[in-house]
Image (cartoon, rainbow, N blue to C red; front, side, top):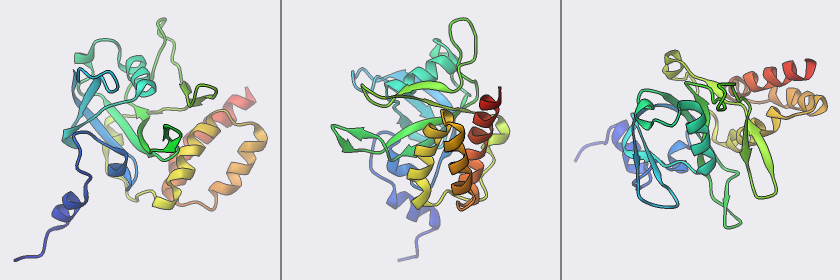
Length: 206
């Protein structure tokens, strides 16, 4: 018998699944490169997006995330290979009225555009039949794939997911409140939300 390596311990704790799921991202967001794109033949999850960090567990995006992918990378799936995605665990997702954390996109290597080529960022998203919102997507480059120095603390995940949505459409009063709250958060959380915060401040001044 021998002591398992850190990699073996990590593998033993990974959820058993044929796809990337939210629990895999408990340690924080990841940046991945698309390696393939295929149809699954299933109505509920028709797309399987292969990613480099989990070769046997493709990302199967929900309809809202599929819209982001199409608007970002176009309608020719073969051209998606090599593009970058930033994926995070969103604990606010529900299914059948019950909490069901999902995998969501927060960054892309090409910002989404409409049919006229105009950039759409923040990108409109549907939270529920009655609730609409927006998400500000981070523009990724090859430099974005450098490993992060710190992981986002588990207890800050829900705050981060909610803040991404709220900050993108926040009023001046809400922004001021977030500014104070961010001062008390960890550096990884501050780094993740700072671009969204600054973008909204700029929009309100225009």
